[in-house]
Every structure is written in C-alpha cells, then in structure tokens.
Length: 126
Image 1: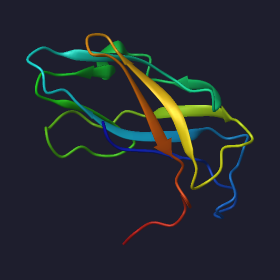
Image 2 (image 1 turned 45 degrees about the horizontal axis):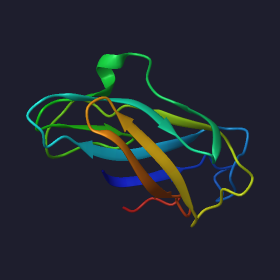
Image 3 (image 1 turned 90 degrees about the vertical axis):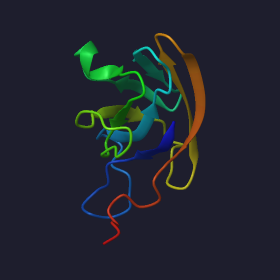
Image 4 (image 1 turned 30 degrees about the horizontal axis):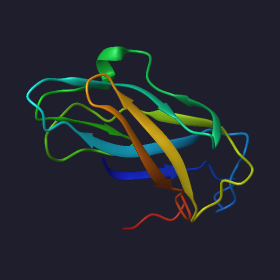
C-alpha cells in the first residue's frame, strides 16, 4: 500500500472541513502475487461508512498489477483510478492527524494502516 491519504471536503475553498460532505480516500495498492486479488472492504472508526464502487470487477488487483483510488497509478499499469468516499467523518478527524483504517483483501487478508488526513486539500502543487 502506497500514497494513502484522506482528503476531506473543504468549505468554500478554505482548509475548513465540510463535515456534511464525504471525504475522498486516495491510495495505491499493489499485488506482487501470481494470482489476482480483490479489495473487499475498508473499515474505520473515524467515519460512519466507507463507500467502495459497487462493481466488484472495479476492485480487482490483477497479478503483478495494482489498484488506485483517487490518483493515477504509474507502475504497474492498471485501469483508471476508482473513487472511494469516506462518509460522516468523526468530529475528531482533523488535517494533520492520522485515521486508522483496515483494508480487507479476498486473498491477502487484512492490512491495518494509519492514514494521514490531508493538511489542506485545496492547496495543490504546480
């Protein structure tokens, strides 16, 4: 798992989190195995729900391939990034903090990861 971070929705192009809007989870998951795997779920106590794409085929990590959410993936090549929404963030979720998340894969099992909350989602690098 690489480049995982949570991008909260911000209010009026400021760095203030818009609590009533879903955040977007960004990550790159790679599969170094010889068989395809599939992301089956993501859980966190920091939100009411993590919404994955409904199409199970969109969540497949091909053998020697990867799956990206919210960002393009360069290597290994795969399809377009998926969108993962994290809904109803807890009050304590703030920029600069980490959110514990559990990623569950059909074959590889679970991966627990501390995912940082983007410090200011409206500031983009040129």
